[in-house]
Length: 185
Image (cartoon, rainbow, N blue to C red; front, side, top):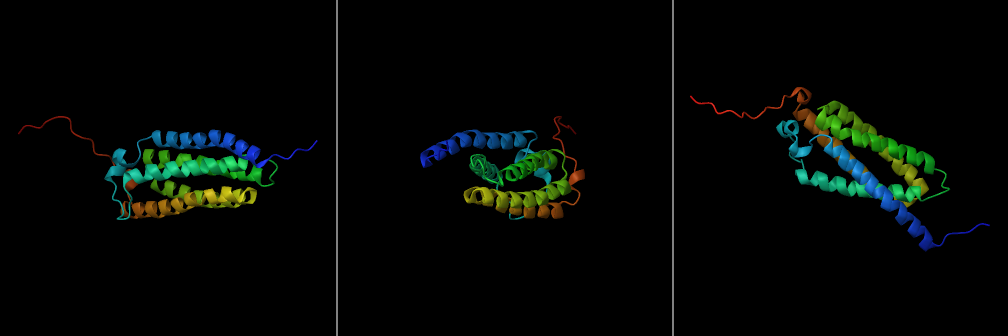
């Protein structure tokens, strides 16, 4: 017996997946950002020269919060699309790019590897472009939900390239430590 689900049943199935995928992606992103101090909380990063077009620190948290929610929603759309031909490859590429995404913060902020972080962003741009294409083949909406992500990655790539230009020795920069003794002369 073959049954066709109603639109209401399909929406409910999507919502059930979204209740799992959105917090999953957001929590992974949050955890990656908490592995090492990032942004202005990172003494190494605070010492770097930054380009004039550098957004304020709070903008990164806000942007990534929105992007992780959109990624979780796109994932829910694709996971819910049972029987779609490109679903398997789309999910594989999505999880590959997610792993790279989550590795970026510890590599840049924790290990101070600017060139490696630039390479990761370049590979991410390729993988996310492929993910958008594959997600779009499964469900057009899923692909569109990732467009802000690719735009942000392109901006982040330009920003990081400029930081690298301004700080060619960033990887060897030693963080100055505050002195906790008073010198009397």
